[in-house]
Image (cartoon, rainbow, N blue to C red; front, top):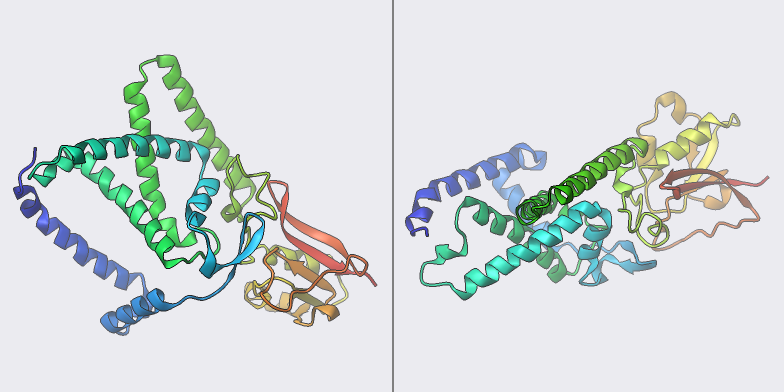
Amino acid sequence: MRSNLFFKNNLKFVLYFLICIFFLIIIFWPFLWANPISNLLYAISEISSVRTEVIDLYFGKFILSTTVPSHYYIVWIAITSPLIIISLFLFGSLFFLKRVFIRFSKLNNDLNDMWRGDNEMYDIYFFMIILLSIILLIFKGLGYNGWRHLYFVYPSIIMISLYGLYLFHFIIKSKISRIIICSLILFNMIYLGYWNYKFHPYQHVYFNLMFKNKFHNNFEMDYWGLSNRSAIEYIINNNTNYPIKIGTKSFASLENSSLIFTDKDKKNFFITHELSEADFVITNYMPRRSRDFIIDKKKYKKYYEVLVDNKAINTVYKKIK
């Protein structure tokens, strides 16, 4: 059992941590360089007040980012994290919550009974990061294109999963069972490595084995339009009638995609927002909120696709002349 001296003795480390965090935020956030305090307060104010509405594709339905259901982030974490991580996390969380409940029910005046040793304290820290972050976003009622605003909690999820793995090793005495579990983890790591190599640079369109055949038309994929670069490259490399008119029916900007091309390539195409005049129309399956362009299959034919797990995340249609 620890005494209250634990907090006093470690207060300096907490202060060091806060000071380091402050300076690291400034170093890695150029916006703060001109006026760190004022710009930081301004950024916090803007982040806490902005409620920009974007379209989310969730379970096959388009919803506004300001009206996402409470299970939005939990579902996204569950379908885009490897199953082995999710399984170990649930197992570790179950025993962690059991331990916390038992300790809390027997809590006396010495609050340090909630944990015994640094490892148990770290477990509480990691779990609270996950829990409070999800609760905060649920309370705000915002959901922007998956769980990208919660990616920072993933290391904590990994740590709770490692706790689950430790429990497996501690509880299961059978050597064969241990070998099976280790083999499953190794196989999963090899598969993830191969998957990331095969589908580079579209690793952000990863869905685990439970959903890899169900994500198309049900959940958002390449919402930022990274695949637009490949689409434009294919168009200009397989056509010679320059300049080529290219447009997109999705909200992702082709102007941003064009910035990566050389000046020579830029002369071979130009972007049009009058899609009826475009020679090629690109879609990454995230429509605009207004002026949605319907592709008439009598006037356009499928020309090129970017595939992830045999599902199209970007499709190019060519006007039939």
